Amino acid sequence: MSSVKKVVLAYSGGLDTSIIIPWIKENYGGAEIVAYCGDVGQGDDLEAVRRKALATGASKCVVEDLREEFVRDYAYAALAAGAVYEDNYLLGTALARPLLAYRQVLTALKEGADALAHGATGKGNDQVRFEVTYATFAPHLKVIAPWREWSIRSREDALAYATSHGVPVDQSPRDIFSRDGNLWHLSHEGGNLEDPWDAPRKEMFKLTVDPEDAPDEPEVVTLGFERGVPVMLNGERLGPVEMVETLNRIAGAHGVGRLDLVENRLVGIKSRGVYETPAGTVLHVAHREIERLVLDRNTLHFKQSVSVRYAQLIYDGLWFSTLRQALAAFVDYTEKEVTGDVKVRLFKGRAEAIGRRSPRSLYRQDLATFGEGMAYDHQDAEGFIRLFGLPERVRALTRDAEGAEGASKGTAERVRKPAEKVTRG
Image (cartoon, rainbow, N blue to C red; front, side, top):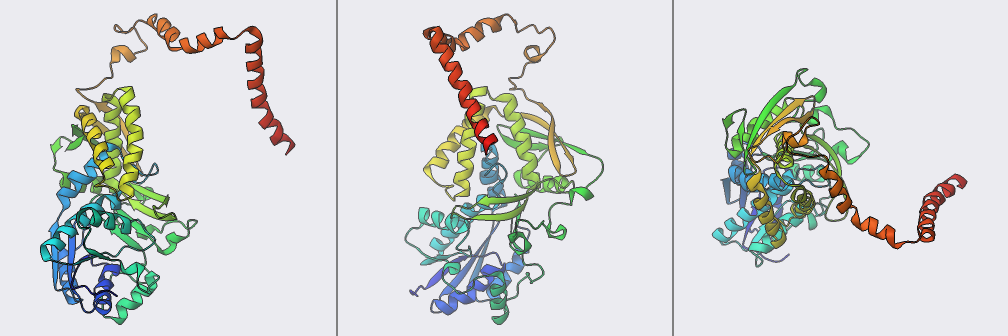
């Protein structure tokens, strides 16, 4: 393998990155390794992580507190965009990777390193997320991706390598799940989850109680937004980190935020993951309700299509792409109106909005009421409908009686033929 002098490794202290340190030393001529660990709220003892990196061969371990930046500039940005991948996934891992990779690059440039390394597998999305970010900010640095180079092919192999090299790890054959956590979510992969027919084990979950064991009484929380940003919880102003931490506790206690998903990875294969996103789930429900109240029909409908594309860009590791940043400018403009409060009911794994209000609301009771509204004349609808349906009326007038009959007959036959074919089959 090509010679490198200094490598900055994206380091978590988990199974994969723990064994990468001795592996790089063995296979890259004893290269110096600087471990980089960004705190995005994974809940680890980062001092212990630092000591572990040094004990397993790193010359240095850089630890940075990125929690507020992660929530404020990444998670909240995705929230504002309504970014949800394949209708369900709130992108917890995908949101953290570009920030971690960017800060890793800055560390490499500061340290004078000539290579970057990560512990993402060759089958996953994270390898793309890391390496696209590397290429954006430091295309001249070599990339070392051990999972694409070494002979290790399973978690069991990795555990055996760790044992043979004296590397302590938290996983065992009984707890073989691959987890990734941050303030926004906790993901679980591997183990029995690799069989999509096998249900998640009750003891696997860490952030949420089983909905069956959740309190028998619902809890209502009130969230306040200013220009699309959640700033108030039950009347108390909270910063980004405290907001998410508090909601994680409250919603998690009610079993809110669980997701069992078979998703389409960027590399072309399907994977099964189980996610816990208590705070993110509640915030998405609340934010969506405020938008429905304050955005006009055309903007709201167009933003729904933007949200799908925005989510795909995040999932694919294109956070720093021109398109994602251009879409973010559109989102920022729409968020100027998104101010108000939402009441969310938490009960047995569900979060549902039960009240919303906003000083920018486009909802008018005197327009919507089924009673005697003062601002809406029902007779006005007649002219509106005539104009709205004018193209169809004009088309009808251009047909003669035979043409109209033929068109009607053709439509009926198109409807009937598939049914006949199914009956014969």
